Image (cartoon, rainbow, N blue to C red; front, side):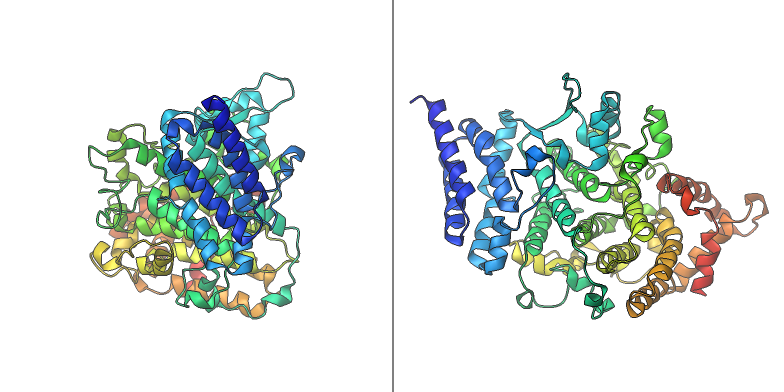
Length: 569
């Protein structure tokens, strides 16, 4: 038997073993067999493993129904390995699966080695892509626009000449795995979305328990929490973020000696690209998945894109299964950008960096570009518009006759984003321990305590002003609509927002002064502090237009600012 036939046979046999593994013993043995196979064979001998075995491995770990691919439906079964490990409460099996998928494990190392040799390419199933991406792939003329607008898809779209067929997305092994990884909670949310949860089940829900809904981000002991597939996924997500998205100048704790924003001249550009790829993937799959306006209207017109996503996608809230994972994702990005807060105040024109599509503005194309990107405010400019729309769609389109559970998770995301000064690395201590990474001390990173608003956060608030104004008014509308479902919870939510906006006289005055500048003509403003704020007003107006694309039917106007301040009095 020649070497190629031998490797093909062995890979096929391993795939069959993986597909049949349904008990703790079988799954553990299959994980060991995968690790043994990869250690035994050099990267240039692993082509058949990644061609035949790897897709089956992904399906079995996360519980994807392989038969669903042919029918075009999106289903996730509850017989995935992570579900079996959770249902049996088998910590040994849980650890075995996690070790296999760990960023420091043999599987991810092999993936990197195989990609360096460009041995394997995959076609990612179109039906698993974000809905607006699928729409663009079906229209031949929009494919080039897709690659121009979204660096995530640059050089990845293959044109299909067969009439009636959509174009395809071709990926290397790491990209293929991360697309499936990002799709996992989307698929589970689609499955759970068809199940109606009674509002009565939420009666015991309290404000002080919201953090506990995100495993690892509460003060409660981990041992008291029931293991779920979601908690496994969150640990894996956090481990990937810690390993692939560099934290700010944490050279003691990270394998990097500088952050995305402060690279040394000899920094490996591939690490930058990997970080950007992961962040963009999670933004597109989670924050923009079913958004009917993934791009600003002006940007679409400039690229000649006139397709109406709204006519296809309609008005719908974010996927119901994404609350916990988006919370961890956004909180982590905010946290690793915190030492940049002083640089927010140095930005002369806050608008130019935050009005585009994630990764499409100031895209890192070279090491020199990477060294200058710090002026745009870190990852904040990438996530700002998608996050704003994600929260806004929840407030506007959340169905009335459903539980407020998912809405509460989005609410938690919003209020956490508005209080970056309250975030500390210690909040991730439990997750750090579970993934075997050293806990980062906030005292080692921050020059002063991050708790409480101070003037050093002025630039952040101005850059994200719509989160403190426009979203407040839409939240009030949401609260009014859902007050009858659970008055106690809704009142607690409203109280929480008011407490944030009035927690500091300095913050309250800043909001008030921006409102005054917003509604007054610049020539009439004689006070020096208003003159200073006047230069931000055009950008805030522009942000309102760009962030709220196609929301005009929901009475978007500038009157939210004075009403917001009236509530805070």
